[in-house]
Image (cartoon, rainbow, N blue to C red; front, side, top):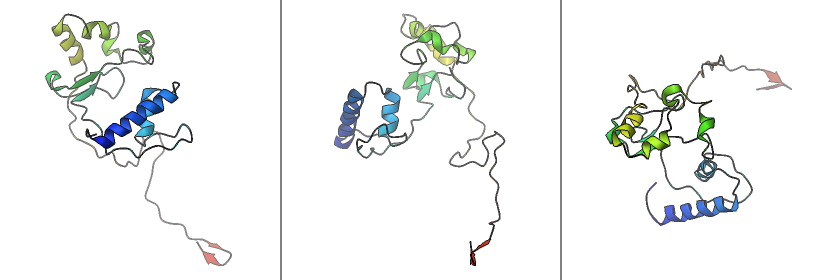
Length: 164
């Protein structure tokens, strides 16, 4: 999202929208206003500014949950989202759902502490091997759940003298 008048107007609307709905989580607000989530009510929304996902090797998530992490060097990161809690800053509740990578480690204390080497080491725990092959995930024929999509031959049948 580029810094311009359209983006500023959109961001101010986002702040206003969230203020009017204190029950809405900030991630719900962003998803709704970017047009990728369901509407919460009938208030019209502005068109979202042009946007694209951030590079996960620059804007990284801690490997606290399956499927997260990064494969760049720690020094190449611009942002590191470390999940201090499941929701509403409840760090004890995250352990039930988390991978064991950070079990027993209070990331908040380490990352905001005085020891820069310990902070770098904690972030480095989320470094993964780069994928051997990038996959095109724009479409897929299998979710690996036993429900598959196969090429099919159209079925032609007649109803009331008309072929359908």
